Length: 124
Image (tube, rainbow, N blue to C red; front, side, top):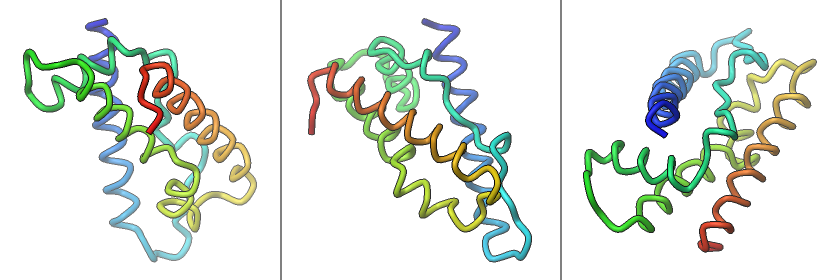
């Protein structure tokens, strides 16, 4: 689990840089996002245990009830990978020839996160 949590922290840094880069270039003509530019999270890293540990470490907590931290991590991922929100954030910049493949991966991740949230007993 520790190695996976470390990967999630690394992923979080990649996502932050991706969004910062996107915002700094927003409105610039010719700024294009390709499939290889999107820091997709590996679905195999997502399990209730790793989400709990990652949620705790993101908030610098050591020991709390598991449910709120899993909910928090899952909710953050749900919002990040929601197809409409992703489209709103990146849609104008997606390379036309890769847009369908990018959105297919976004949809796959959204479905995975939603299924995991349901599995964790948090359908809302």
